[in-house]
Image (cartoon, rainbow, N blue to C red):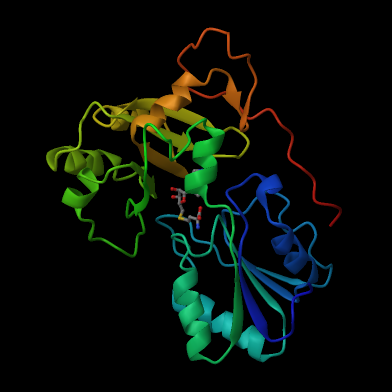
Length: 281
Ligand code: SAH
């Protein structure tokens, strides 16, 4: 269905692999009058946009000046009130650490109609492409998505470390690389086992995805050594071991037979699959 005039669509673009964009997102991108997009959107995500569509970059680079959140809200409202069909395109899912909730509130307050189009969130997809199932019948009956609070606008951590240390399942930290050392120490101090497997996944589902596997106590050191940087996810829990257990895992597919020797995979080779082209721009 085409994007409607005067409506804002809060659309998730998925974690980076263009093949993980939803059909609904592509339909809306192809028909919108205006597209306000983030930095972390898949390559070619805007290739199907109309030639005359207004493409506006409103992304944030950690630690650099960017368009303030209130300004983004204001511009979405103005565009919709001017009668445009508007797509607000965000990495992953708009409601998972994507500030989609805040933008929705601003739109509702201004009386602007909006719709949410969920996307594949990095916590699930980057983990999967690294060979880590975030839940597992034997190893993890629950999964928690947690912010590592790298947001420059937030200094204080409001996390309940005691609850997280005792959480009976996998912990997936978004924005967690910069504070990894402190966060791991806080978890261990609150009772989480320092020897629990943990992984850091850089550029999950994107070209050049890399995974470092260690323990909660040693992951910060491994990340530092490997030079793992943003965007990256931190996964804490026995399931992180599976990044090692599945040999030759890449691009979400196991490329070696199950009988081959399960050599530890410390770093994942560059993602070999070419990006899907979404059509001429
Ligand atoms: N709304 C997004 C998350 C935005 S917060 C989603 O649902 O996925 C930004 C954080 O998401 C990054 O700091 C990183 O922790 C994580 N992230 C996003 N894309 C990623 C990717 N391709 N690989 C690893 N982590 C990613």
